Image 1 (tube, rainbow, N blue to C red):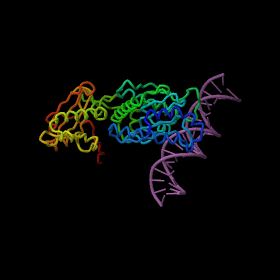
Image 2: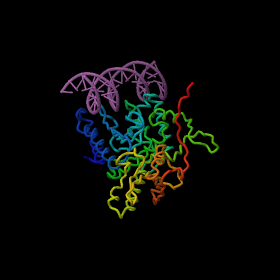
Image 3: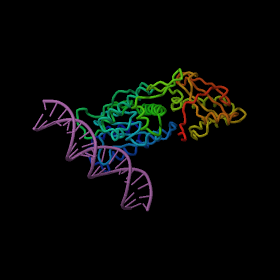
Image 4: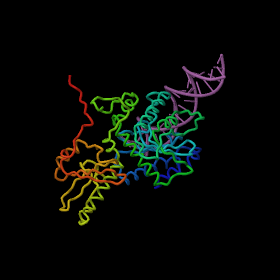
Length: 370
DNA sequence: GTAAGCTGGCACCTCGACGA
DNA sequence: TCGTCGAGGTGCCAGCTTAC
């Protein structure tokens, strides 16, 4: 199986020649349809990211595409390259470069608004996300990307749509591709950004609703100090951000696993049973880490991690609160903070009501009966 | 008035998924 | 295995707009 760098390098080097040959049963086209999916899937499994995803790639259907692409979807918010927001490798027409981009599907805007207005709309939404996402790394920038020759006339609006749909990106020059490890690291950071964006959507099941919300520019988000509500395009949901920040969360969980093992150094049998169940069994158990007390009784540890101080509030669901009450004797909440500097840990045992106050952050709206 | 550019509609192509 | 259908993409063409 080829790695990410090899896949991208092969495409950059061979695509223009391949375009001169028949599209049907083309070797590069077949390679491009299968190999990126295979590699990225194995990468996600290896890294332990937990989200529902799909991977697609295209060099065109029936004809060679001007801009070949590889797309990684979070299927909660996007299932097609034509709509929603996803992570895309977009190859420049002249194959001089490829962008890893947090990208919007252009066809949605095209079909909804037509080419001219659609371009204005998609640009507005890109700008919105640029302002409202934290740039977690200096790797990415929010400059416009250049996939096509601006002096050339194109029959299709797709390439320009891809350019305008870019929210943030990193450019890889064909003559100076980074090593595979750097590409994987960038992909991990981009997944982190996508998950942050997902947490800020108005409705993750309806991207159309979120787009309309952004385009309306009448955004009610933050609770004002005087219990009034103000209109602002900025959301500051620290809790949601914390929840969505998979990388930070995984780092925190791994930190706790190592910490717990260090506490069980005298009992190798118990030490070997410490398990990151959020990865091995999924999120449904109500806790992240299975560990043990020295007497062998189980500890069910929920890990809450932030990059900032311990005073930053964190998100906890109603189910998690309920689980803490029901599993009072075994339940622990480990609060990991300053994870990117010198990680620190605070531990809370049993019912969380004695340690924290809780504020509701979401409401379920039920239609009133007439 | 005319030519060039832009846009949307439509036709057509291939591929992959799915069901009979 | 074969037929059907949807997805994703491009080319052609007519109609509208704009610049000279």
